[in-house]
Amino acid sequence: MKYFNIAIASLVLALATPSVFGQYEVDFDDGSTSYYEALCWYIDHASVSTSQPIEGNRSIRTDKLNSNIGTIISPWVLLSGSGNLTFKHRIYSFNGSRNLKVYLLSEANPSGELILNYDYSNGTTQTESIAITQSGLYQVKWVLSGSGGNSRGQLDLVSIPGTYASDPSSDCDPININPDTDGDGVPDSEDDYPADQYRAYNNYYPASGQATLAFEDLWPSDGDYDLNDVVVGYSFKIVTDADDDVVDLFGTFVLKASGAGLHNGFGFELPTVAPASVISTTGYDVLPSAGYSFGSNGLESGQTNATVIVFDDFFRITPPAPSTFGVNTWPTQQAVPYDTLTVTMVFMNNGTPGAGGAVSLTALNIAEFNPFIVAGMIRGMEVHLPDYPPTDLADPQYFGTIDDDSNPATGKYYKTAANLPWALNIYEVFDYPVEQVPITNAYLKFSDWVQSNGILFPNWYQNIAGYRNAANIY
Image (cartoon, rainbow, N blue to C red; front, side, top):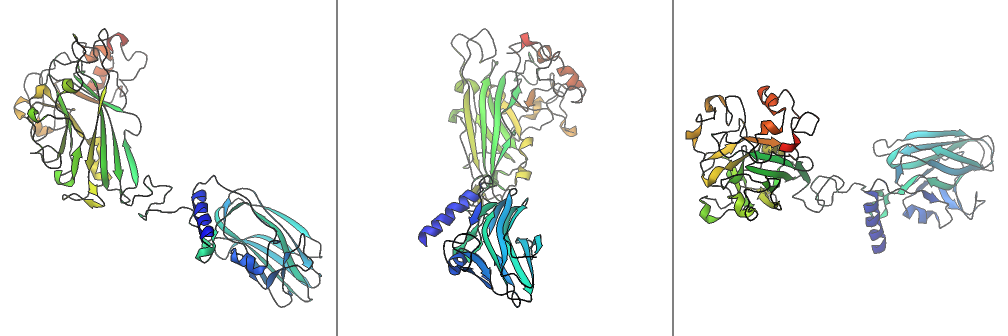
């Protein structure tokens, strides 16, 4: 029995892959009635008999049908959705009135769906072939009945288009074809972590590939407005449990370019997450001498919302090539390989959330995360995306000065009077301008997009004829 249980476990794994189907064939020549009943056949008022079999050494033969109804039910079979049910049958010593009905049984319809209703007119062997379009777990039921006379029914050479799916070790119940190994309520076929009860799904932002952040660092002045002072590619993987609560967040940040004269840091805020909801944060690169303060969970101290400082100085991590200015913004200068940082934030430990409570994927709303740079390593000099508010540690004295037209009272942040932003978030890889070329001279539809509040040319950054001056793009 130990070997049989191992075989059943292997069958469960095989059946979990929908493309794995066979043809379940039985000729009833391998043993007695009890042998087939042990294989989950139900045989009532009938037996596996050597008396005048249809073919081979044995067939199923019913009792006399003048006072009995012979019922034969197959084991559970995982039907493939195509193929034919075939079998041979006849009335032995034909006399009286005799009938065969065949049904497909399922857990949802235990009384069955009638697929054949056959009245016998003689004792000739009949060969049936019935197209089967159902898929899933089913049993086939044969019901032989009659009145008058002493004739019996016979059944042989059954072939069902599917895979055996009964479990003899569990009362012949159907095998679970979509198991939940870790018991978290998510079937293995849908579970990205089938052996981990605390994790279930991977969620990605962007859905694939990388998005791009590009910053101008001379805020509140618009500077040279090439928006290449900090260029970071990013993506997030968010692991959630069966209830869609966040377990882990992995942020991957690729340091691509910096055409800056300043040493700039980079971080992001999760506006809907309390710091106490994060158990730990690791993977950031900040020197103790940089002037930041962190809590025991790795988040920046003094913030109302969870705030991560990913790095304190772009040039310390990705230094320019010798005798060059900046990193990867002058086409004539030596290119510098990208550096990548992966920040890991833990929200749950073995199912237990941080002290601030669980955070659902919906509440996290990662698409609205709030990235920013810290310009010139001056902590209060934050530069954010347009209309994204600063964190608690930004210095508000710069709002409304030089070229900045922010108005916190109306929710306007980090825009000029003409609505030009100091930062961009592009939901794909972005080809940023070369050094000292304003983005308006590189992307010819950018101004139209800005002035229309994003209505016109929402794809201004794509490589479409008439949209860009390729000579001004790195």
